[in-house]
Image (cartoon, rainbow, N blue to C red; front, side, top):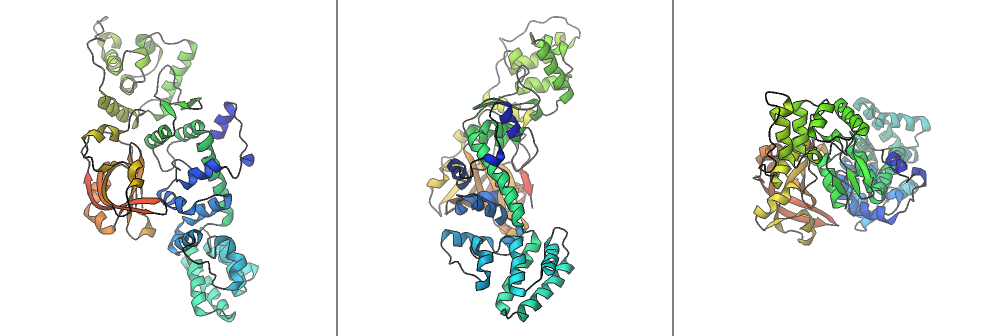
Amino acid sequence: DAIEICSQRGHPIDLAKLPKDDPQTYDMLCAADTVGVFQVESRAQMATLPRMKPSRFYDLVIEVAIIRPGPIQGHLMHPYLARREGSEEITYLDERLVPVLERTLGVPLFQEQMLKIAMVMANFTGNEAEELRRALSFHRSQERMQRVAQKLRKALAENQVTEEVSEKILAAISSFALYGFPESHAISFALIAYASSWLKVHRPAEFYVSLLNNQPMGFYAPATLIKDAQRHQLRVLPVSVTESGWLCTVISDKIIRLGFCLSRGLSSTHVQHMINERQRQPFRDLIDFRKRTYFDRDELRILATSGALNPLANHRRHALWLVEAPHYQGELFTHLDEPSDLLPQMEQVERLTADFSTMRLTVGPHPLAYLRPSLPDNIWRCIDLPQAGDGTLLRVAGIAICRQRPGTAKGFVFISLEDETGISNVIVTPDMFERYRLIITQESFLLIEGILQSRQGVIHVRAKNIERLPTFALETPNSHDFG
């Protein structure tokens, strides 16, 4: 969609001709500034990118492949990163494996490498390697894998491979039964990841609009995507009955307009009819708008509450009054003086609450921006965490936008906490999770005290205490929670 929007705006892009070594794109990847970027937007990817420091395309291929259950459970990810950083010597289980593993610093990361290892070290034939590939495939069976492993162990012994090396080879290959990537797949995914990254850097308006128009997808709700867009100097305009379409639109390189697809409770048919009427003749006022559209009273309340009717009214409360006024509903009275001068505008917090009740997002300040003045001074903002030293005891607060308890993490839980400046990552130990399970799983706003961990450009907070953050009632978007 982003490519199509670019073309419509006179900026045609050929993915095959994107510069493969764009410095700004790799700088963004190294900084883990990847909210919304295909394949590299997860917490685990963001924690790896600053260590990986990708500077060429094949680095991105490895980045895509390395955050998989196979390399993680096979204890292959950390050795690769340590070797890349220079803190671990590059070694090989056998000199015969140098040509096979040289590109990945002696660590097998791809399915093709596993097959080649079997052919080199166990003299597997092409057919036997194909049998191994099938055992490693998505439709794998434990029985089939064990049968191939026994055959491989016997062949390794016959080829004078020591038992120690054999077991390491078998462990690595078995780990790929837990979803390791073929290199060909990783290359394909990396191409899309690179293109997504390039678009975020060079065509951000089209990038964010395409994401918003294709929800739900990815890790992040529209509320987070919009805040990320604003942090990247995009101006995000609210929904408007005189300007918005069903989809979000690009107004200019630095301005986007939200569409009614993000509103809750509106009929797409009714919205499209309104757009057709608007194109035929602009609406004179709210009465004219009501007469010429199909919106029912509940939909009109949504439009008024969200501010979408503001171009036809003085402000949201005025629009709500007009929606509810008897003369507007065609009931007993035919005329009432409009009390627009008597109706105060909504306060900022009221507008925030109205935004979240109708769209679960806001183009105004982040909820934490309203809470910040009432919070103790020792609660750190996400953007300031790099200034704290490793081991510092501190507190962070925000909206839990992602809670993750992966099967490869031995019961650890990872929380992504968003405030008005960005996203911080919190590590919760298994015992801490059991102690604070209800707060972690049920509360949207969290206040977390913990120890800062800052290593190789990666920052985490290791939780020591977790509390509910007292706040106003907001219908926040569902966080991205998974095991």
